Length: 117
Image 1: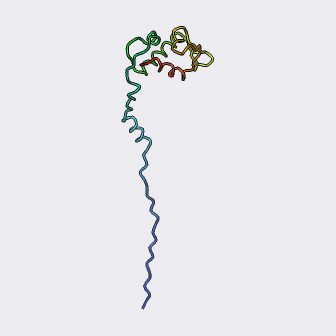
Image 2: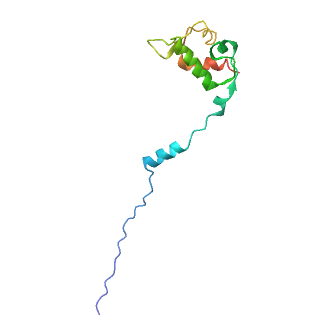
């Protein structure tokens, strides 16, 4: 009798390929989903008397107040030419900035928030 050959099977390692998202697909997905605005920023707030001289007395969203404040700063050239992050306060801005002559743009929002109700 002839010996029967054993059949040996070799198992190949099967790689599980996960479907990777291509950059084009993720970019399309990001543009499709629009960001929702934060309700706290969009809430209309009434400015104080000092702030109303710049932005008006009508209730505005915090983002609109900051935009109008920057328009005023650029119109009157109140940014420090050497360091554009600093704002030089004029007579109208000093009461808003707590009497400080120079305020950084990062401190500005802190002082402005105290004048919104």
